[in-house]
Length: 480
Image (cartoon, rainbow, N blue to C red; front, side, top):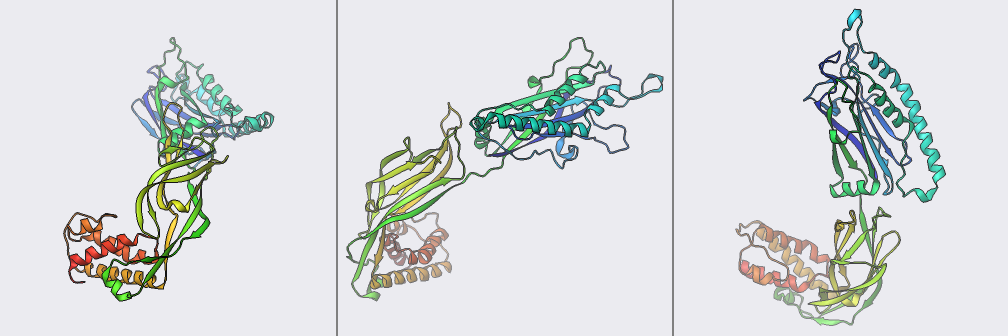
């Protein structure tokens, strides 16, 4: 999973500089930000200066109560604080470092001198050239560990503390030896196992925010030091960039035609117009349906459900009582359908349905077991239409459908020119009852238009429902 990290703001509640500091109660803040993921090259950023040269202040002065918006205070040699996208696996150890250093500020000292000796040492030790060399060393170290550990360790949480991070920590400890209140203002370190981070991001709709405060700092204070105990809050955004998708493919594996039967048309107008015997039959189709995600978790395998029934075995058959339609007799009923289910090693779901069960809909869901003590988190839901029995007819039946479709189109055109007021809508399965109790509104017009444009080419649809709806509309309009 591709994830990136972006610090957003630094809020100062209390500086480390005290009134006894040579430069006063402001901190001259330098911010170091680093992220490590497994054996990948760490991403490290260092803040620059608030004021452009030739100003003598080369860091960011900050007082208690002030906040640095990092979107407006960019790191050195970077266009933003957003890290590269790390490829985070479930077993990776993700380590985040947020370090604030009070370098001090320029001041006029006794004897005609000015400045801070410690600040000069910091600038020398944290030069850009040294950072690049340390980063290269950290990358080489990570690579050597990766090669020596073997592929079997890739899903284990393995810490990689590179030379660059160690150098930053040493820098913070080094300046804490001073007595003029230069030194570390905060040292925040966060370690997260990849699985926990991915789970948190999924639950929070792909992004999460961490707030670091003084209770989490690794910085220690010497009670004998005259400096203040600093309190800084740092806000960090973490974003999941990978897109989770689950697609499906539905293939007819076997098609068996049924014997032809007579069809008696119910819509009188079109029945008279066609005026011939109509014959219909159905094709019973077995289906193989595959649901395939574009991701795979080893420590969080997908949990699939069919109509709320968990699929707990690699292969199993579920029997579900559902509303089904049997063709060509247009019978709607509640009946048991059997679905064979299989989950392969890639966590793909395969369903096998039987055409003899009829046509129906099923709800397919996928869940991730994000937390051991919480129910699985739903990431996917799809209503699958299984047209196990599709209705066909002879030339007379096709002519009848053409007449019905044309009639619906003419009615929809007439309704467009007429105003009706109501809040009721026709519901599938109850067209006669609803439509005879009310007049037509724009919602009903939309239904009629859908009938007239769609059902002409969808002969597997319930023609009896179409006929009943059309007959009711004709009665209401009383002109057709």
